[in-house]
Amino acid sequence: MNQNQLFDANMAKRHPIQILLVDDNAINLKVASRMLLRMGYEVDQATNGCEAVEAQRDKGYDLIFMDIQMPEMDGVTATKHIISEFAEDRPRIVAVTAHAMKGDRERYLDAGMDGYISKPVRVERLIEEIEETPCKEAVEALTNIGIATLGANQVVAQPAPAAPSPVDLMTFADMLGMDLEDAEEMLPELIELFIDDSTDQITQMKMAIDTLDFDLLRNASHKMKGGAASVAALPLSKLCGEIETMGLNQVVAGADTVYQNICNEFDRLKAWFQESS
Image (cartoon, rainbow, N blue to C red; front, side, top):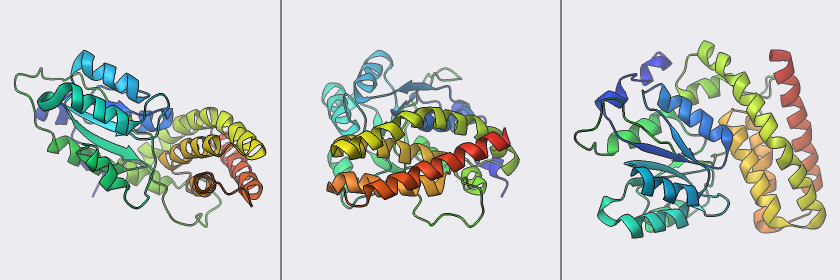
């Protein structure tokens, strides 16, 4: 099937709801926003739980895609605030995260969330959650749709591809429901954004290893892991997942080696970007 057939350009007219994307990762927000825009939805974004709660107060969304691990206020806490404040008028809230640990899905549902999407987000899952959300009557033809990005990223658990490219273009196209030609045109812009966004995280990881700051190591690696998965930089995402696990388990042995592998793979990605630009 042609990947473009996944997108219904009139879906926002046919199924008009207001959507909020909540995520602290700029890459995740941009990718999800692009997918929703191709369905006719305009996008609002929030970068942490506090902003999500305020956005719900201001506009009253029908559907919120909520990242879990964010600064200031995490997604679970934000969900509890929204449910407490809005009760029966609350939106559907769908967790979007790269965490795939046992019991996570149950924990999110117990907190009052209505669903769960793993990162990197795939267009089919967005469509499913939109269709599960009831439309309010008398909504204008093109709804102001706000999108709360998920930051999270399910790391695609597969080995580095045999091809020399650090990016799996076919995976990226499939994830977004695009033709290869369209995906190839879109990808460099996202790679550039990811590179700019990840330089600080590389520095933070090194600092965390040197100072044994496991919280910083976990947070920096989690964010980079998600961004890498969203641009289908699968080997880099896998490495970031490895060092994130070290942070979670407070294990320092071997962290320097994994960190160096991350730096090498990040350099390989930058070289690929320069050659393709």
